[in-house]
Length: 92
Image (cartoon, rainbow, N blue to C red; front, side):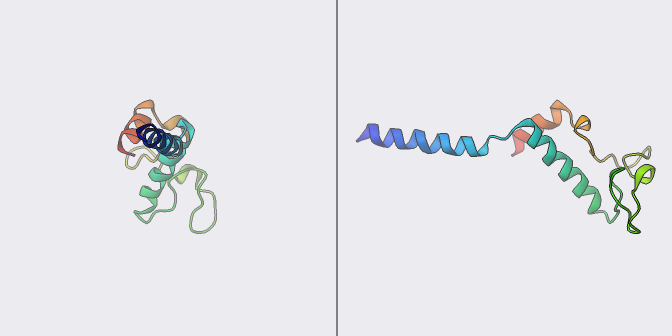
């Protein structure tokens, strides 16, 4: 009986770990999404160069990402550091 219970617990734990394990690429995508979302929450539409302004034009050089100083949203995978990934994993 103990063997059956132990086997079930191991199976459940394995299933939970398999579902909660995400790739670094998925973590990077989530970090970028959260970073952009935090910027949009300020009421400004141009976090990243590829975003669109209220008038429908591409933000380009008007984006927060392209302008020095102020907000620094993460827009591209290259912007996310190994430290960012480790911090994300430790919190989530």
